[in-house]
Image 1 (cartoon, helix red, strand yellow):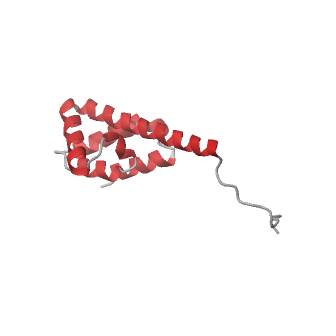
Image 2 (cartoon, rainbow, N blue to C red):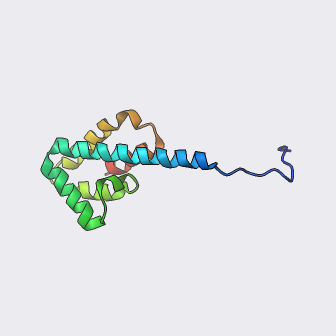
Length: 115
């Protein structure tokens, strides 16, 4: 017996717990967005402009939206010339290295780095 009585209830997250989860997600979204921007700037301003423009025109989104939808960013990167995709992904991974153990960030990195 689990020790549950008829009055036992499964508790839902508290309001403060939910707020912490939302804040954590917002921080990770900002962190990933900045890592993407830094990598693109390191590649050169025209690359940043090209990726930003493609995201806006083809997906109606911005760099910071890519945290929740890394597939879009992956597709845009794949359309870049030459080995730019691999170089950009490597730079993003380097920028996020100390946070890569966190599941949402590791999933993001896995999606953008897939073949």
